[in-house]
Amino acid sequence: MSFEHAPVSKGLMVGLAMSSILVGVFDVKHYFHLQLVPHISRYYQYWRLGAHHLAFSSSSELFIAEILLYNIGIQIERQFGTLKFASYTIVTTLLATFVEFLSLILFHRAGLNHFPSGPTPLIFSIMYQYHRIVPSAYSFRIFGLPLTNKSFNYVFALQLAIGYLPGSAAAALIGIFAGQIYRSDLANLKGYRLPPWLASWSSKYVLPLLGSLRPARRSNRALPDEAAIDSDTRPAQQNDDEEEVITTARRQPAPSTATHRNRAEDSLRADPQRGGGTGGSVVREWVEGLTGRGQTGIRIPTDAEIAQLTTMFPDIQRNVLVETLQRSPNIESAVETLLSSQQ
Image (tube, rainbow, N blue to C red; front, side, top):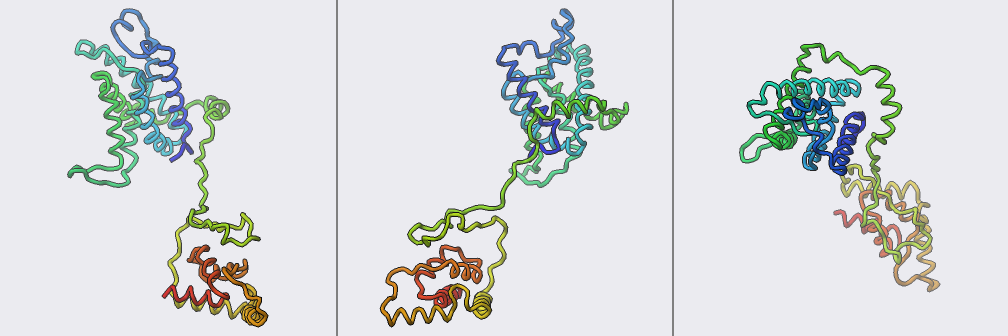
């Protein structure tokens, strides 16, 4: 999975990682959590309401959040569209901030006085949309417990929710509540979109900073290790760029021996001059036998002979064809040897 058609998700991941690292490097983590007493009630630090969404205070929380944004944020953005998803993140963050502040006022006497730093409500609001929109791809059982491919994301989200109890659990519930409010469209929140000038400015200045969103191109061509031929058995005139190139596409079913035999006979019958010619090979062998100029040792096959056998037997590796030609006095004997080995 890549970031194609998901620039907002990539921007969230990059921005969250950079801000969390900078907060840790400059040792200012104590400015990024939300606490009613004394920060808001006594010192009136209302800027913490927005600042506590910008960074996580620990690397473990950052790691889990990055995994969740990658696994669920990209899919939700592709479902919504980039503009709607960007609007959704802003709407749910503002709604969750208001509910967090209201929760601190109402439940601080019950022990809820602190919300940890990090956009936990936003992540859980996206998780709610992921639960409602994205279907499971497969299901399985572990010790009789039914699970799906989405269960792993829920396990990661659970770790994020129980990190700093009770504030982290409350932030998770508030995020789910914000996602429900947006989906129910009680206040016509679904119709909100970012202004065109902001979308245009982001596309012009922010999007180039994120780099390419396209997935890495994967070639379907490969050179297997077993296709390499030793230099002493390779023809001296063969260039390096003439090595066999094998594609990774699915192979066709291997034809039967009768099909190989018919193909070989048809090829030899249709083009007797190919690969040096059938008649020419026999005459050359007869003349060399009379004159005593017959070669001793391994015969070096020509490129035409190798190409002809490759056409006849496309399912046999090239090095096997070359070795068969080297052990055979002519191409006819090599064809018979290969046909007999198929039986």
